[in-house]
Image (cartoon, rainbow, N blue to C red; front, side):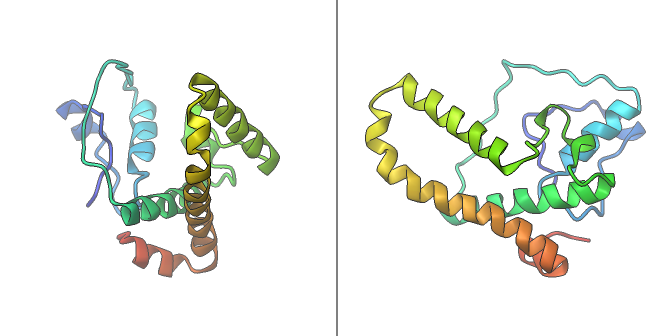
Length: 160
């Protein structure tokens, strides 16, 4: 079983009382489900802003699959919660409800990043096609999961 929860430390007693979820059709979302279960079991989750972890960068193909998997997980999490938006699992990472709101959020973030350093404008022509490819991969994960969930699970290596 894969469990993506880096930068996380969990006490053994917490794992005994509330084990990590198994058998979910998720690529990387087990940590979201597990953190919700821990909170419901009465554990306090602490955030440690100074904690750091390092791991090798994924390959470009690995990044594409990560974006496909993220959208796959968002569809599956919404189904697990019985809530189309998936809010009960997302907590402070609640998705923006409307495509216009998402677009506005992305544009505001891009404006802030470009305002930090004016030289980033020079990189914009190279970054836009890459961003478009990752956006398409993200949307492909949603379409694939909705149309052919078994195929999506098999392609993403999800164990059911």
